[in-house]
Each structure stands twice: as C-alpha cells, then as structure tokens.
Image 1 (cartoon, rainbow, N blue to C red):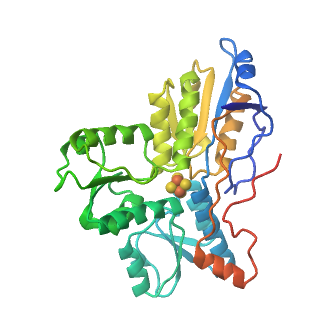
Image 2 (image 1 turned 45 degrees about the horizontal axis):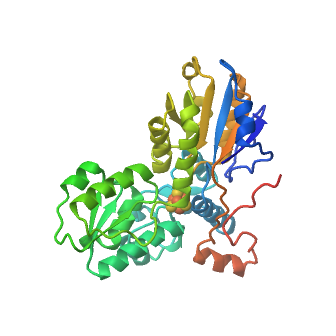
Length: 370
Ligand code: SF4
C-alpha cells in the first residue's frame, strides 16, 4: 500500500468526464502519513485507489463513443451500457437511445450490447431483426460465459452465484439454462437441491462481494465436498481491487462515501464492505449534490471511493464539496496499481480500420501523465 497526499480541487473539472481515474502525482510512505495523521478534530479525506473506471467499462463507453462518431445518431444500446446514471445521461444527450429489449430497435439499426453481456437468445434475436451489432460485453464476463458453455458440454450442473435479475446473470444463465442454478445467497446455498453431488461446479457473477461469495462457496462445499472450483476467479480484478482498497481505509473512517449508482452491483458492494470493515457510517451517492451536510457531524476522517462504472469527474466533484466543508487534506491510499486495457469490440475495430481511425484500438484511454 502507498499513500499520496494532495489538496482537493477548488472547483469541479469539466462536466463530461467519461474518464479513467487520475494518476496520483505525489507519493508518501504509510509511516509518513501516520506521522502526519490528524490530531483530534482535524479533518482529512482518505481517497481509495484503485477506484472508478475499470478496463471493461472504459472499453464499453469508448465503443459507444466511437459508434456515435462513425454512425449517424441514433445509436441504440440494449440496457444501460454500464450501470451509471451520469454515463447514461451523457450518452443520451449525445444521441444514444437506450432500450430494454431489441423489439424497440428499428429493423437493421446499429445496436450495442452492454458491458454486462447478453444470452445467445438475444444474439439470435438481433440476427433475426438484421440488426448491426457491436458486442461491448466485458471480456471478463465473456470468460464466464465460455466456462458455462464448456461445463454444460461436460454435463456438469453449474451453481451460478449471483443476483437473479442482474443482466450479467441473465446472460450467463442463458448460455446453459438447463445446466444452471442461480444461487443468490447463503440461504439458497443451504437449500439448493442437486441431481448429482459429485458432478457440480460453481461459477459467479463478476461483481460480487469477495467475502460473501467465499461464505456461499464454503456452505456449498460443506454440503457437496466434491464441488469443483472455476478454472480462475470469476470475480474480476477491478471488483476485488476496489473492495481491497475500501477495506484498508474503512477502519479509520467516520464516514465513507461511495460514488456509484443504485443499480451498480460493485458500487453497492463497496458501501456494504465499508460498513463491514469498520466505517462508522457509509453512504452511496450518484452525485456530489446528494451528499447531506448532516453526515459530517463529528466526522474527522471521510473515506471516498467509487464503483467500476463511475467517471472520475464525479469523485472530483465530491472532493471539491468536501474541501468546502473543511476536508481539504486528501491522502490517496493506493493498494494496487492497474494497467489492464482491453481491445475494442472486433466489429468496431474492423470498421475503424476501414476509416483509418485506429488511435484507440486498444480500448483504453490514455491515462493523464504527471
Ligand atoms: S467490473 Fe469487472 S467484469 Fe465488470 S466491466 Fe469491469 S472489469 Fe469487466
């Protein structure tokens, strides 16, 4: 873990802000920060890192931006491209039409599948309607889909740990519905009935609580000792890293603010993890203007983080607000460095190549230098 210290911005940056977290500019050792820790009553912010945009979200948002650049609006997106109010509203203003189902899209129109993935039935429906599609499913979600297909072919029963109704779970379940049972929580793990206890594997949604998933797996393994593990972690690096960072800061925080939308699984998990790991209080907000002044009563240390679908500009807005309330000292606590980037969806890459726009073929944005 390392810590950087700075002063919060005096005003919010540009309102668009679909961007990766800013790269820290200065570093201090943990000992230096502890030595400089505020005495009673002094106000500071512990800013968690990593936070905000992951590689899969960045790729999906860039894919929609590129689609808008090279096609006449409207560009249709099935479901929210990522679960963030600001991203959806900003892209809507730019000409994107978000739909719940494909029957709302005119025949032949350009349609982007969201980062959460779709089932084969949705892909087939798009083909039936002659839609031009760009599949912005995160590669780490696609990996889980492939696992589901592979283990279904081996006639295994898949116990898919995840939340019923979440788009990602619908997509993964749809790969092998006859072989898959969704497990929402510990109670369902205790109750699930299986056909052959010796032929089971568990998989999971990518954005779950690491601790809760381990607890569910432990209950399942107690009941079914031969339960097979997935070949590699299904909970993704971004979810794990953001939870690890918030676990580190929470014990020192009187208040933790998580920026993220209510339907963002990983953002909601961050708030829960903050509460479990010792924050006196944790709140989730979409925007700085939802922060309530009453939360600051008696608060010396505020923790701040954001979900994997949250543009950094929204965090900077909260930092500016905190500075107004006297929390101007900001110590960024870095528990992991991330440099993962994914290539843009292949349909888009081919198109960008044709028009000579390959500048962002990797799908990642340039991180600010400094
Ligand atoms: S949270 Fe994880 S699985 Fe979801 S888009 Fe980001 S990297 Fe991909």
